[in-house]
Image (cartoon, rainbow, N blue to C red):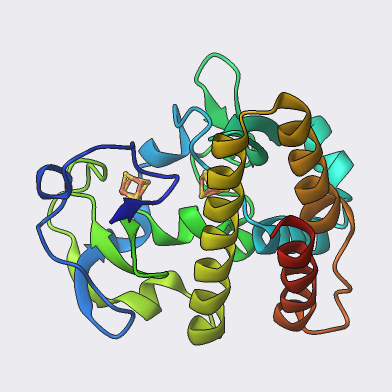
Amino acid sequence: MEGDYYMQRDIDLREISDGKLYGSNDMVKADCQDCAGCSDCCRGMGTSLVLDPLDVHTLCTGLGKTFEELLEHSVELNVCDGVILPNLKMAGEREACVYLDDSGRCSIHAIRPGFCRMFPLGRYYEGRSFRYFLQIHECSRPNRSKIKVKKWLDRPDVAQYEQFVGEWHYFLKDVQKLLERAGDDGMARNASMYILKNFYLTPFDSREDFYQQFAQRIEKGKTYFF
Ligand code: SF4
Ligand code: SF4
């Protein structure tokens, strides 16, 4: 089994979760009642809030910005297992997400990225699919109440979204394994350039279905790499 980018590697799931795995129709004790008065998971997160192509498409569309403009302000690039990927930038002395406003609220709540929607849940991958787990040490709010996972994710399209998340995760995993085996810096650079160009820098058409466009790009990507 593998953890998501959000959880540290080689960590025992039993130590960081309640020991259960959840599907999107399950109830889970994740509801922190709108986080009122708390913004702990919007600060000090290092490079862990990795953005997938849908996150970047949603931010670009919602804010009317290009990916390059996001990179000037709120997003940075870092190497994640040999591949360069974007993540939300933590800035300033308080190491806070740029989108956290002065009153400690998310200023882009409606278009916040997938990891922000999911927290304190994480993803656990197995057999080219994934389920969710509850991170018991991450959210400081006591007495969280139960909520259905898909309601917590707050998306209209959970089935399609989960298919996309799995596809993207395993595509990256396969590329990362390929690069690890090859041990060739030039190949790793080219792979990162390909991924950045085709999944982040080249905008998705907001008038068309994102998932269909993504499916076409991932098929091309598989042909390119494998
Ligand atoms: S995008 Fe919003 S919810 Fe996510 S880390 Fe930034 S301020 Fe917090
Ligand atoms: S730590 Fe919990 S209560 Fe605080 S902002 Fe994060 S999810 Fe909300």
